Length: 577
Image (cartoon, rainbow, N blue to C red; front, side):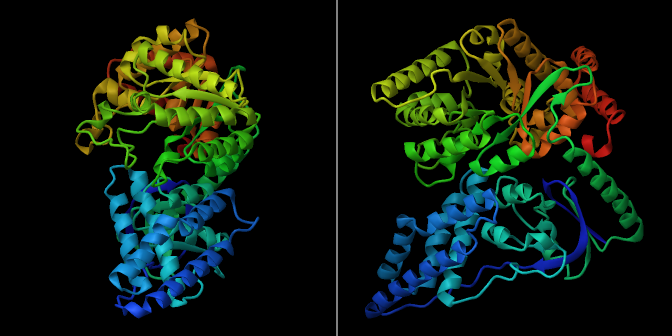
């Protein structure tokens, strides 16, 4: 038996025989051509582009999911990108090389630039360019259908890596689970496996080189473990866990159409966090009460150029229409820190405390104004709420509110319709904002607590630094007291408070947060039904009693132990992993 540990990318358990898929890149031919052969080679490349486009469009049918369609259309846009195609054509002409060599060289340079980014999402997006280059090289060679598009038995797929196009075109009815040697949670593949609800473990290292076709596999997408040829005792233990998991999943599905009503009638709203429009279907399927956080910066990070007003408008409109009549809270761009967009000059020694989020927006009003116009234009297509990130005090809040009013006036003058009653909120994720919550609450319609940053700024811990990762503690008394204070100040000024950081999606935190008075929790849609199940099983009185006990404790170690014991005494294993 061998056990491979990796990243839990999509929850669930899968058991079956392995299908090993070694997706080594098609070797590109390296051949020089004569000057009088350039025209013919350019024509060959043009035919390859058309063939690759036709291959992708074969899958663009009404039968595929919205997630698949959006990613497929992104790849089609790459094939129509004049800069990318033009660079390949220029490489053929300038260097007198065959089209395969040019495709490989140009793509490798683009991938190299993307992989140098400090942002995980941009590094993962390099895979899309690799994917397109493989399509093009295969088209030049005349290679046929990829091997995963037609399967005749249920398998656990074990691969070195997968291209997004492979995932949406493969026969998913026979894929029980997926193990990949590499990858990260921000990749298109990770987004898709969660949308397809395929249990998946990423970053297993060398699993694909140590597994043989037909090997018995048990894959645990909740713990991030892959068991190969498990022995009898382990297999029995995992079979029991699998049975419990199936029972748990069945219970969760019953939660979809139910309100998040606690046993004494108190109701909370559970909303979903999204970063792209392809996640909307998952939001609706989870029974979310709307979108509590749309991270709009990913529109800027997924492209090599700034998204136009029209492109932003269409993205916002799509989400608003899809979720309507439920509300959608769109956070204005929060770039900088660990989210870098090439070409904007954000390159700092201490980016987490630097030129980011609203600070960047107020310095680059040309970019910020375009986003605000797009948001206002989209507001007539649903229930929009706008939220500003990284507000540190009333001066910044006044500045962005003033700019928003200026953009509204421009729209009125241009007779551009927009919703005049858009609710405006601010994120509370900087300690100074928490301490001034009573002041800020008088100027906005709602708060949303961003615990990811609030924790690192409160404790002075870089959440990306592995050396001090143990200090990044959501249950630190300073963090919990800050959250409690923010809620109190907001309610004193009659505005609701949401929490949209990772704490909201952690089942261990759910009852405590409810007891601290949060009105809403916003999380990844895959976590929502678990949290709903927990909150429907307790009373608000019990939750408040738990919060009162915890707020009197003086150590995150004590709090962590106490919370885990309290939750495990009341809820099943899979709800409190």
